Amino acid sequence: MQYYKDIVFQKPLPNEIRRLGLLPADLHFHTRHSDSATRIRDALKLAARRGVGLAITDHNQVSGVAEAQRQGIRVPLVPGIEVSANDGPHILLYFYSASDLRDFYRRHIERNRRDGPFTAIRLDTPEILDRREGYACIAAEAHPCGYAFLNRGVQRCVAGECIGEEIFSRLDALEVICGGMARSHNLRAAGLAVTHRLGRTGGTDGHLLHELGGVVTCAEADTVEEFLDAIRAKKTVIIGRERPLYEKAVMGTAVLPHHLPYTVPILQARWEQGLPRIRKFVQGRLNR
Image 1 (cartoon, rainbow, N blue to C red):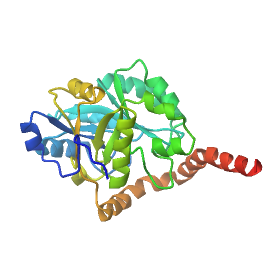
Image 2 (image 1 turned 135 degrees about the vertical axis):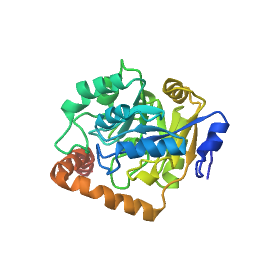
Image 3 (image 1 turned 90 degrees about the vertical axis):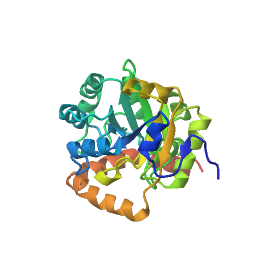
Image 4 (image 1 turned 45 degrees about the vertical axis):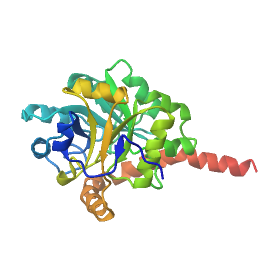
């Protein structure tokens, strides 16, 4: 099993990380503005107390970022969004300015959302990456090797020939420690980042308040702009651990009520996402 010097699988200690001159930030966290019950103010207060920066990356939504800015709590806040692509991957976009994030959302995401606000929008991954051109932002793929049975990772989609492998060249980074994934998934993601010469990010994919800061991306930076520059320059260290199975079950139970009202559009989106594989399977049978 291969390990990497800039990817450390242990509990982050923010005070020690800061003493080394690095800024730690959880770059994947959800709030009540999507499928979590966590209040923005509570997340910011905990981030401030723990000494970590934060990217609020709600599913297909940016209102949480706007609320966070209004709170006035002194936390390094990375303007972000997790966009669920129609062809499967989840793209984490980190913007240098909140105004650019809002503009991108208004022009490209809001009008393409489905009735199920947390499920895949009507744009495929290449289209999302096309539309982020012209904005100062970083594009990272969340949990690139997960989830089981679902096209929610770019590597799964490439392996299933739903997306061409050239998509990696259009990303800036891969999430190499995701708190919701298994160690094996994260190690494969780290290998992909090396193979495709991409930057590395990490985050909890947290939906419950206590999860915040369990995985952090660390960079030598004093500002959000310098922090994002470090990701692009591949000068980050990722520190954190995956949640144990029982904690994943607790989180899943907490998230489920947010999705149940949108069961029909979620199933419709899943069906559309599965069509390419179904067509490929049928065509393969016919060509025998």
